[in-house]
Picture 1 (cartoon, protein in one colour):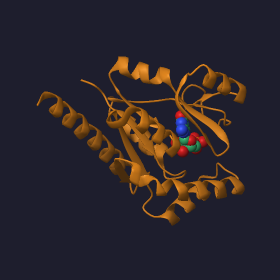
Picture 2 (cartoon, rainbow, N blue to C red):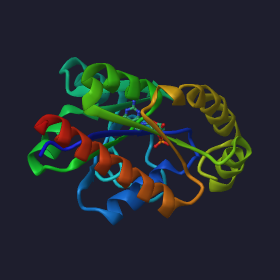
Picture 3 (cartoon, rainbow, N blue to C red):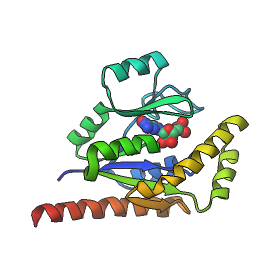
Picture 4 (cartoon, rainbow, N blue to C red):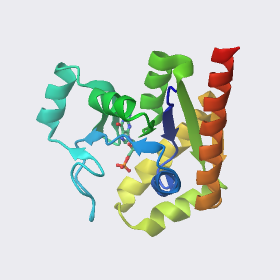
Length: 194
Ligand code: 5GP
């Protein structure tokens, strides 16, 4: 059975990473695409696990080599999905989760159409997002302001996604995502057979 290509986006601070981790923990049917980036690793982040951390020069070389399915500049840094990730997931017959920004999501939608399932994670309210960004303490004030402005723009694109999931509670949001993916898989299987 063909597996899904799942794109998950959401504003910075919405808790996408935690929700995606909960999805991966709940089901071994899902595998995460490890993106490449030029941003510096945060404390605790591991090269090859959280991201492939590259220099700007290495990233630009990969662009030239057409190694990316999509890439974008987010918060002044490069981020990109490696073609290799898609091929490995296909071989392993798992759903591939791309946790990427809205520019990347739109590029995937253009390229893969119905084959990609786009899910946008929303905060219960915008104020909640601002509090979370301040509380996680991983960015400087100037960086937080930048992320809040980007978040406002990103939320406007949420309607372009196939589904919108509210992260009111991590386990609930993760269960909803698994349900969306499984029912999409069943529907596609049904459409093929009828
Ligand atoms: P962070 O620096 O907080 O890990 O990620 C910043 C933003 O970059 C997030 O919105 C994240 O979804 C996005 N991002 C991570 N990897 C990729 C990627 O491969 N492609 C694109 N287009 N965005 C990415």
